[in-house]
Each structure stands twice: as C-alpha cells, then as structure tokens.
Image (tube, rainbow, N blue to C red; front, side):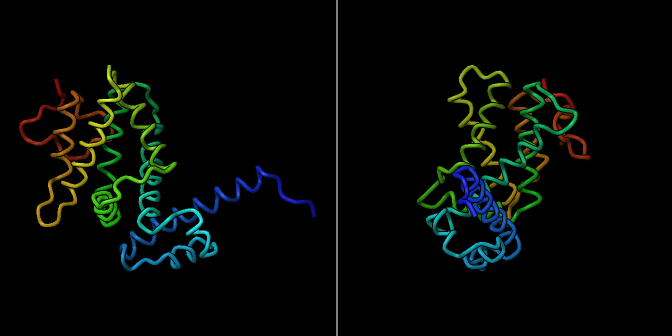
Length: 209
C-alpha cells in the first residue's frame, strides 16, 4: 500500500479539525461550557483525544474557533441566499440579521463565546476568525465604505454590542429594537435583509432615510 500524498494528509487534517469544531458547537450548546470536556468533544468528533491538543492550545481557544466558524458559515449562507444580491446595502442588512439571528437562536453558545472574548486572552487569531473578518470587511467595502480599515472594526464592535444586549441576563433588549437602531445608523430600509414578521418599532419608518 503506497503512502498517502501530502494533499491527502492535509485534507484529512482539515476534516478532523472541522469535526472537532462542529462537535464543540454542538456540545457547548447542549451542556454549557463547564460541563463540556475536551474528552467529550473528541468522542463526539470521533477523533483521538491527543488531536484536540495538537490543533488547539486549550478549550477556550477551541470554543472561540468553533463559534467563529459557525458565524462565518452562517454569514456566508445569509449573503449567498437566493435571490443572491451584490447590492451593498442588502448584503449589510443580511449580515446584521445573520448575527442577531445567532444571538436569538443559540443564546447559551453565544453568551459563552462573548464571555470568553472579554477574558484576558481576547480574540483568538485563527483561520475561522480570519474568514469571518474577511466576509465582514467585504460587506463593508461593498456597502461603499471609503475607509474599510476604520469602518470594519466599528461594524464588528456594533454587532458585538448588539449580541451582548440581546443576551444580557435580566435586562435583554429586543432584537427588533437593536435591528432598527443598526438599520437607521446605516440608512437601511426595514424590508432589506431578512426582516422579522413584526412591524418596525414605533418611531421608525418602514424605510430608513
């Protein structure tokens, strides 16, 4: 039996890494961060325990990479959803809706993720975070930004703040209200993106000016 080529080995490593990331998202969403062990993640992914440590320095870094992958895939799907659009305003609206949707649909996972980011290690610079950043930067550029290096971090900060506000224990803000604020800031019509069934919050016109 001939040895596997370098490209085959690279593909196997990529698949193993992605299985670990997917297993992390599933288990933390089901059990919470503290109740999920690296051994649990390896078992769910069907990989050896040692591979977890090979790819990731610790559980917190693994979780951040896993959530950044989920965010990247969710955002990518939203931007490419039919009918596909190259309009910058439509794509920005879809990006806002995709991120707010994750906060609503996966509250435990996203709350755990945000808590980890606020700890000392902050953002994990990983391939998943870089793919997410590239999508958001492209969205800002297509929207018409004249200074992407300034406007991309601002959009990222605003989206992070909106996620925290949706998930704030004891005092959550309605996602529709936060959507309205972001849409007004960027001059986006309420009907763009994936609007909720509810009408725009009182005081906001259906079409932003």
